[in-house]
Image (tube, rainbow, N blue to C red; front, top):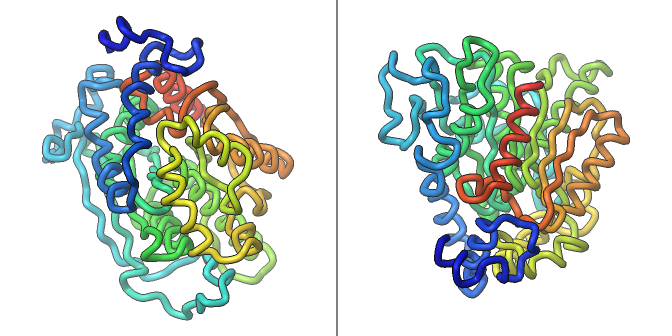
Length: 383
């Protein structure tokens, strides 16, 4: 940073109004577009996200309330690089209440009448901060264009979200649940929706967390999964009210969408324009990831029906959206916000300028990331 500040300063080609830290980060990360991208490299890099969020990076552990320290139970946090105790979840569910079915959009995909044991198994990581679970929980859904991402790589940054959000009892931190879900191209998009929806039912019925105490948070494609899960829950409730099914799963308190990827149709607008300078989704990433949408979802009509921004928003809980005006998902994010508001959903949108995709995940490096992180945390505390 001092070297960049001295030799380059604000002459990196980024807008002059962004922070010096973002100028320096641009100088470092721009070179990534010169390297070939593969799914394996994407999965490896996202599995190493915890390296960017050690205990000494923002927000620091020292900022947490002393009562939140996990000292009164056996704690494996040092092994995982976090403060709390990490439970590795492996639970076979006996029942699925909420139906998901985007596989029926593709004629080559035959809907299954009976789910296998592996499909009814919830896996992931549950981060607990004290001897008793917190009343309020953040349900964290990682991103990666449905091609990459995992629960372990998100532990550090997710814990810090729980630390900053706190809870309403003695200032303790919120526990975090990060479920695993199956990825494309080995599996279908519907498998990811099924896995996350089943994990939500596990949190409610097996761990006993009240729905109104759960906030869903999704990053990029994880934001798309948040909306798809909420839409599935709303559809299930309408079916219950119409007498078509015997039960439904209640809605969570709300959903937080961090730079959500929610339009799976042919790329257009900001999705095509801003890959030229985006630090995260550059041309190489775009060319590797986008073709899988057509491969998995099929024709245009199928991709429209699978895209959450074109689906029904009636009955959804409040949404908080954080996005950059100059990143690839800006157009589709604002379309989603408008359609949700038109359907009566309480939507709060925070827009930053000149930032790259998922810039809040860079909160350890740039002040804009810290400001957006705080914006989301404040919204979670208010809901």
